[in-house]
Length: 342
Image (tube, rainbow, N blue to C red; front, side):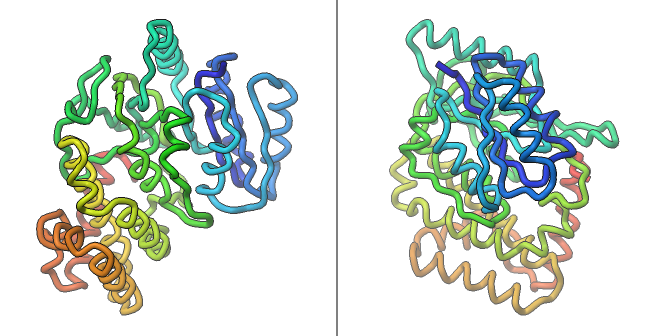
């Protein structure tokens, strides 16, 4: 049995795909690597096929028409045979020593007849071109190296939200969560790190720095020039998140999960606000953002009230649009310096 299926959605990734695959290969026969070639026009398909030929018991090359990152994640989940499922972007990589510790931990748990629904590990913002790093760990939020539930989770604040890079889902539970990502849409990792969480009852936080998130390419989605252009896609993701669970559903969840879900929605709504108002005094952007609020109010007035008056968006919503954009650009620049995003 494969312990972990690693899906690598890949589009025109010939320059860095091999590095991602090579680091995961150190997991040996305990891992399955699914290279999802998303309609690439460079040598990505050739590289994927080469790995599948050299490591037929570990690597599978899956070729599909271009559908975007979300479609690659969806296809990987359909194809996965591992007990757990993890997504690794094609320009990122895993720490080999941390991977061995994670696999050993899972084997140890299985030997005792124990299975987590969700393993949480740390990730590193790795600005490899400049040699700077920032590690995001979860020591403040979850007990280390023991099984816990959402009742044990401590509060999250500000920009602290769980990201896809930290999450290893049990495959069967993830499938049961009915999490399907939209195609041709950036920022779907926010939804992927939100929708399945109420289904993940048994949690294990392993305090290792497993995932390296490469920072530094001009075309990355976290680049402020790019995300202001893609504000409509962020709105689409935020709408999906708001629709996933009603306010009343969230309020029936365990206290720790309840607080986290509302915090996460609040934080991503602030991000969405920044996407919209940081691109200038554009009436089209402003109207699209207002339409999002109206969508939430029409579907779930209680969630609208929470986000509007009690969540983080309330802290800046009083500002005029142009002033809000300036304030949020400054805030993002400070965040980038702290976590080495730029």
